[in-house]
Length: 408
Image (cartoon, rainbow, N blue to C red; front, side, top):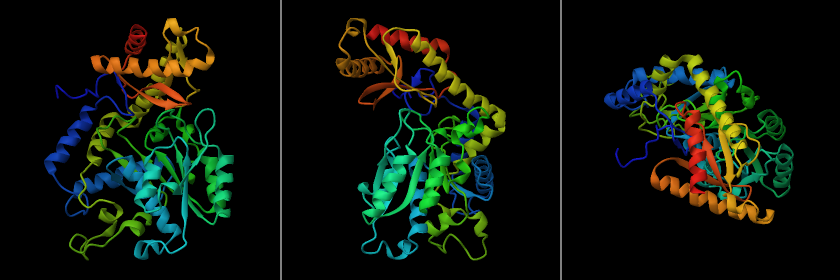
């Protein structure tokens, strides 16, 4: 522990997760003590009931009243399961026989979507080129007009569009794709619509910010990671389906040494999962929900959005700092120039800002005072603060800016 990164520290603002939840940690301990696997009700009766109840609750929040799902070890696996389900619906023969000669499936995701989407295409045997990047607008949201154009273009090239991923909370800019508009295009062309809500799905818990996911009920599937905004320990990821049966259609193997004839398939989750052995990951979320309730989680989510907005205000008050893009989520992307570089020609600023970002960030990480990430955005390296820990105070945010100025 001494030599590990303290991800629960209020000055860890590096990834899309942070903080800690004692109730969830107790749930994690009990899951380890029970040491069971979530493939059958017989092996994990309590875990199964808890998971089914939580999946129902999450589905209701998304707008899937008849939906089903399963917990997975992270958003990347949940996204992969959505692609597998979509591929099975579009090509029903693929599970038994594979793709036929001449079949050329293609998928679509925004240019700033998570890398797990094209990687899912690789795992499914479609190749990285089968995922078409859709340009984004000035905020980072998928451009629906470009999606329509690219679908038509791929059809003319003899390919078969079958899947589009809308992102609710992009990794760097925190943008929310326009789900309702994308859904209309997907319906018109017969595409499976998935929402990668790994990061931003938790905004559905907030009356104030749930509008960012307007139209979620129109999707076929969604990924939601409670280990991000909801503060549950890694990993806690839900794969949610609007209609039951798709996961089994794509993944079920009916292993008779696990799934016996006298067992109820409604309560045996093994054939809905990509895994066989699977931890009782639902328990930590269950414990946390008992403690915080809907209202507690709503306050947490609202607080993280407010924290990011406060940081933007602090940035605006200090010379040398520049906000990159208008942003919707609890991410803040910004750059900084030291005083002796602020008179540089405009053409030189991106290079100078990039150098300052990388060097200052490395110094802060090396001394252990703050851990803040950087990423490429609009052509240059950019600081990315993630508001993920409710215990991060305004004083912590101001101290980060002080530290950047001092290193500059």
